[in-house]
Length: 94
Figure 1 (cartoon, rainbow, N blue to C red):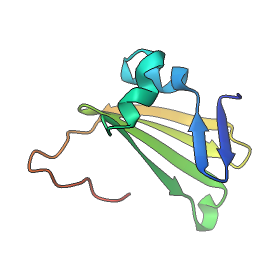
Figure 2: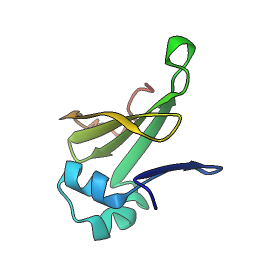
Figure 3: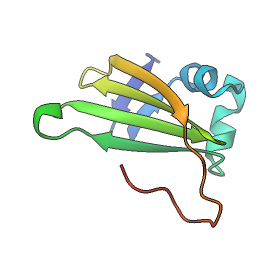
């Protein structure tokens, strides 16, 4: 697998990339995503951002965002605080 693939079912990101950014072992990434311990969002660019996607992964109180182009090349990476809601409400859509 290349680092990032975009297929019919959406994006697939190499677990090593996510693991390094979120500070967990690559072997447990998939297992943490199934019960939503690690969650993700994908936002498609429109207008002048057409052909660019933001892939954001949330774990604990941290987030990791990849910005990729239409050839699946990583344009940027960012890590930032993203506290989870305490009352069980979901995060606002991007």
